[in-house]
Image 1 (cartoon, rainbow, N blue to C red):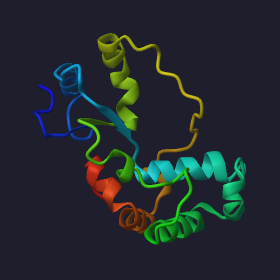
Image 2 (image 1 turned 120 degrees about the vertical axis):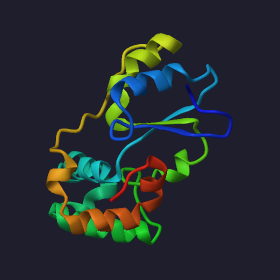
Image 3 (image 1 turned 90 degrees about the vertical axis):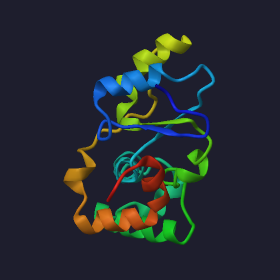
Length: 162
């Protein structure tokens, strides 16, 4: 069963079994608004390894040469002060209250078949693949805590705990 009027459904493997994910998507009405949210730690690791390290954008030059721990410290401080670039901007302002269903980025591939059959969408394509280890391996407990405090609204709407 999909979300009732005024409710928001968060689809996540760590919150519901895989079969329930598909049932939840199938139970949504045709007017359901879907949004995708990515874990803040995964976004930071992806931004650092895919944009900062190769210095792909002029807006990240000041971060080039930092190790990952330093990058996380600086970015979390900037985000806490209300400053960020498009690569690690908090997601809550774009997503909060605007979608009936928030799908965790990590689950999108698994659910795409059901969504594309239902709505006639094509294949899921990506233009900027991230190739990095799981963030849980790379982040220290202190880095997770810093990220949580800087991105606490994202953690809240994504249903994650630090």
